[in-house]
Image (cartoon, rainbow, N blue to C red):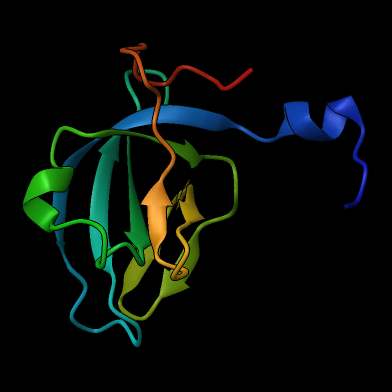
Amino acid sequence: MKTIAWQDFENVELRVGEIVRAERFKEARKPAYKLWINFGSEIGERKSSAQITVQYSPEELIGRRIVAVVNFPKKQIGPFMSECLVTGFPDENGNIVLCVPDKNVPLGAKLC
């Protein structure tokens, strides 16, 4: 495991957002969803592509609060521009389980 400086961690903007829209990403090479995530008034809405189709349906994602990196550069994924990185952990089969706050926190709150 590589050691990082505290400032390295502080530079990563891990924020809480709420998924407001989710749909299948039909053009993706691997099964994925297109997500629209509200991070509150400071950051606004961002889009992301997430390969979480095994653990979640689009319907159950709506209203779910998640943790995402909001200060990576935008990334073009086929015809879709991803503007943040949704975080998660692989289960025993390698399928991603979302990283979520276990209590209600304000949209846009920064992980500390």
